[in-house]
Length: 453
Image 1 (cartoon, rainbow, N blue to C red):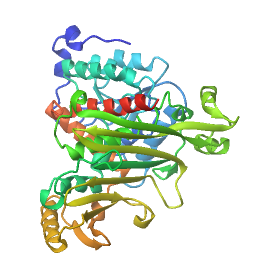
Image 2: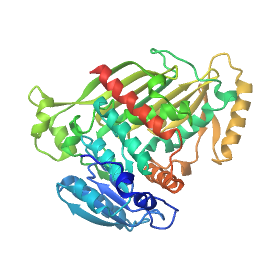
Image 3: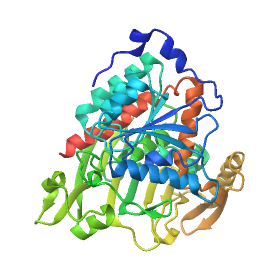
Image 4: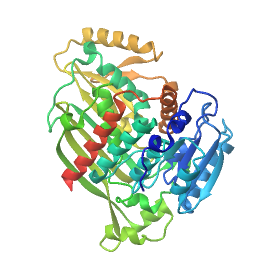
């Protein structure tokens, strides 16, 4: 697959077609091979700027049918149903057909990652805007291809953007806001490999419920050559948050600012019965047999840890995949930012009812009464944007009390990302720091993968 710059072929025609004003229905979505449920979550709600007619290009199979069933579920739900009209092309030449016919101006891609980078590059090369689920690359060999994709996007006047939902989680937003208040946080520590200044850990589960239904995962999801190992997949979110929180709106130069200190990977082991429950398949397909040990146990390298330095600050990002969460539990997130005056900690364990809670814990020697006054002033500032946020005493400091109305949930964050992307389309550009920081993010994950192989 290869495309020259669209401007070279079509002059200014394509550039004119990609100018957005915010008008009703001017954005026309094309969904490419939707193998991951994230593709459907982009359409969980309607958008004024997006045409309800969506074009889907995909091969025949359960991935496509599962996607269409999810969209149908959104259309037929009792509460706030959507009105999407899916126009589907089924065929192995789905990508070529999409580029040739081009009934839309934004490609949404979320699924098998084996060829995702090539699809992205050729789509922007053809003058198509791209909203891509993470990860955009899963091996270091494709980093230069991603760089080329961003260069083509700029040359063709289109926007390439990945879906970073975790920036919209309210406890993370407030952790970031408080870290920018010297009176509360002080300055970010430098840390060390043994005790990083920033640590983020994400725990996920293969068997889970999405939109109230048990999620059936495709078998390729367990093939790391197609999905990607955990160190380059979910860790994309964690590395993104470290950049976004610690260095807001600052450009990260991956050649100068990122140094991988150490990295490691390890497998999650699934029995045949567990694999059956999460995929519906009675046995392992041939392309997974390479990862089966002791005749029956599937080893999936879904777990990974990155220890690295970013602009001189020690950070750690780690992802863990278990088979199934404990009763009543969900995917969880742990995060700590260590400052010279306080630590900002997000916990989401049993004690928190498996819901993220933000703690502000002053370090030893800080005057508690004076600190509480400074913290309250900081919360007063936050209340200008998030009325109702308050503080409550805890064993080691304070808990940030967050009204339920701000707790949108993971699925709703896809709508928020899409709305932000629509703003960027209208502006005709991404913020100056977004593209270099996307490159820095994928450099970090793939270089860590390379280090631990």
